[in-house]
Image (cartoon, rainbow, N blue to C red; front, side, top):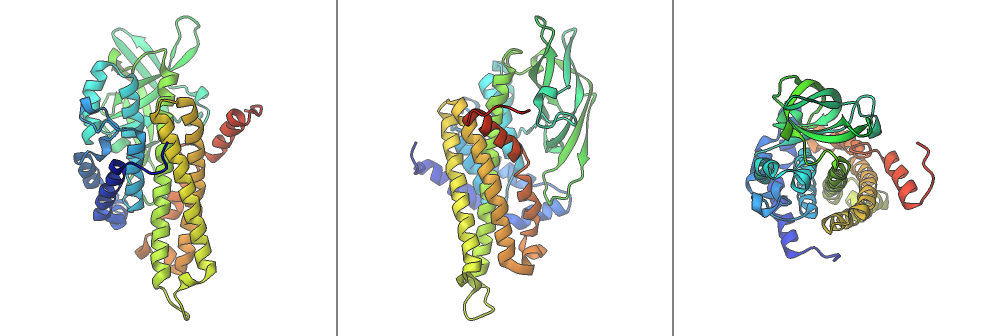
Length: 385
């Protein structure tokens, strides 16, 4: 692993950053406050191939790895023009289908992931399950030449902008009679599939939803890959999710620190600009250090994943997600404090990041569950849950 990114990766970062700055944070906030979406940015990013950098070339993608897509996610966020669904649609769903989907599923879905014309949400969390996926009750049963899917999901992102949802469900194992996890592609216009928006105190154009699946009839080929490989398939998507969430957080933190540094260089109330005072400078320097450290672990996780070492990638991805979540919260706090009262004025756009940055410590996996993971798998401590 090199600590210097390839020229191609660096060029990708620059091009994506230029696109993000073309739209800017004001564009995102305007869409959020009007109840709209960032469709124009998504469509342009997709048309330029940025959303499909990790899709195999034979299906119209860039043929790169999750590290390339993480760079896209980070640079958009660093420009203030983040796209939350990048964490889900091309990272989780496209990766799982590319790795485990049937040939027909790959032909049907991957070209759309490559150019951004397909968006797919991902549904695992349930009201009574939360972080305990063993308690998932959404169940599929065979019915004639298809499946009937019933259950509920909650806190599912961007369903209103998606053509389909990759749903984590369970089926009964014919040999043991026990339920085992499976994945289904469910069109959002399927009869029996409904969703309801969850009102959130977060200024974002990417919304959260509850899903209701009431005997949703699906064809046999809605099942992704094999009934017996769902756990492998699931982790093939969850590791990229954590890597992307870390990149999202690092980018957001970079945006906040850059805004604060610019302000601290020009804001003058005493003899020198406020950035000359250590009480202002040191928190920003600390934030930059922590963001860079989180970024390094994120790049390590992406390199391990792209190298095929899923177990090591899982450990690194969880550590990266933890580090980035902690770093962005402190970065945004330091940026707001640097601005004083202006830090919460709508004109500066930082107030909206307070709740958004805090969310990165909760989703897509909480810091506590990451600490549990590291305690159990890295340190070998006994499990208490």
